[in-house]
Length: 167
Image (cartoon, rainbow, N blue to C red):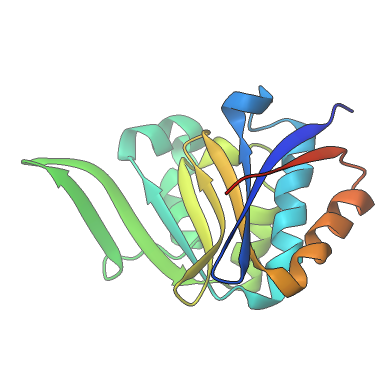
């Protein structure tokens, strides 16, 4: 298993740890990336309260197929919580936020390819804790006092990593 490079910075008593898909060259379905994602989730699991998902109708239909509507409903999309991002008269994407239930967490935790949904976040109320953004990056925001939990999860999952501290 090859090691991964993680960027780390601090802001307001939190560590922000970022995995760049461009820098690491691993695909979103790679086992190492999935283990990293699971380590991120596990390290902040007790804090998580909501998920937020942004999707484009065409893209989600291509990645999830006929089950797209079912999956979005399972994750909590309803007519009442959908917001539309528009460019003129065209709907560019839709966003919904829902409570994080055990079923939703389990479904997302075991994704075999993180890019099944293009953009999603796990939140602690209004603080984004784990963020996947269009196969560009995967990011963890964790209180400094709990940061070691994340590194322990990586070690437990046998994911070798190199940490680069940035300002």
